Length: 434
Ligand SMILES: Cc1cc2nc3c(=O)[nH]c(=O)nc-3n(C[C@H](O)[C@H](O)[C@H](O)COP(=O)(O)O)c2cc1C
Image (cartoon, rainbow, N blue to C red; front, side):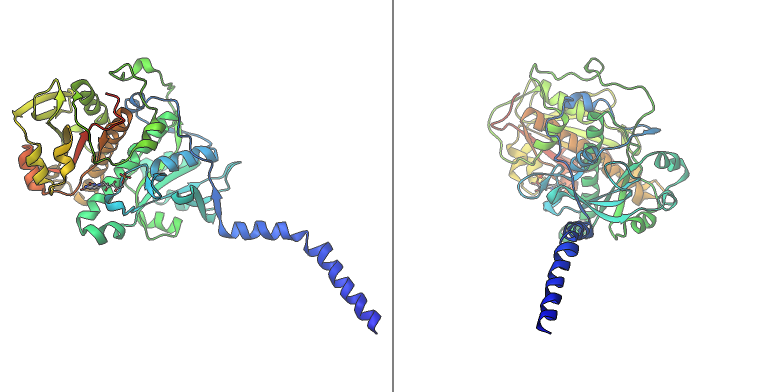
């Protein structure tokens, strides 16, 4: 009897060793796939394409050829949209009060490096979380209008920027909505530059049926923009000969270096900034693809303090012929600082850029909520370029969205119907190379 019991125990132990132990790795894989987190390769922070060239070679195209993205392509673009770059949580784009309302998703049709499915970017560990394996192409297409069908149908990977408005509106009330849209514009701007650096393209789609996209990703976050990933159908190669040239002989930063060094800087050192640098920042930062309207809906003004080659005063930057025109002489920076809730960096900087947009034009549209949102994307894209140009010159800047609109408009003599959305001080720092 006792012998029988012993044999049974021995059998049980042998069974565990022979049958169950080999199953442990499989169980671990299953547990891991249950968590559905996929690590992305670290982003390339060096790149190769100088920022100026990318800024003057837009990464968009109406028609796209499919591009089979690798996991590192996908990771790089997700990083440009929302990757963590400084501190423990600050990102490639600014965020009002660090409220981080943006969330990025992708729908991927399947490739050797990533299974077909819907994924959610997790910036903290630079990884993606699988929301669903597989999805119906028809469900995806049903979210779009006819003019965008073909482009979405043709590509394997589609990026989506969503927003959780309450993160920002809980802090800033109704104004938070505007802040969220500006932030999305910053992210779109980065995405386009990153694409250009990778010789890839997108069509920026801002009009779709939100509910369908929310269903696809099983989320309540509001989709703001869809970015299908492809390459151009035109023969296109980047050559410095055809693009803007950096005014100094310094080798400027690449797209990736500028994005990774972008941050808000509010402490400036004394000195002057050369006019050529200011002019280059204005010209290149405003060379954006307008997602709605054209450059006549934007107004860019310069309040110059310590600019070498420019008298202190107010200047109007003509977006059409890219020229700077004197409006009035005198020190307006302290008045602008007062209108800007006395944020001292406005007065301390060598100059301030004020970006306004034509709200009367928006209000004349049937869907003014949509038009307002997309116009804010335009403003955000310009402001992101200012950040990146400043990073490239080692200058400090910050996108200031909190101020008395009426007073700022008065100070910079904004045209009728235009409302200021950003004040961007630009100041010297210890790292400046101008
Ligand atoms: C829409 C918007 C409004 C902002 N308003 C202000 C502001 O009024 N004053 C300020 O100093 N910074 C402002 N910022 C900058 C944020 O405070 C900054 O982006 C955030 O602290 C994260 O830091 P980072 O830009 O270095 O990543 C704003 C940023 C955004 C996107």
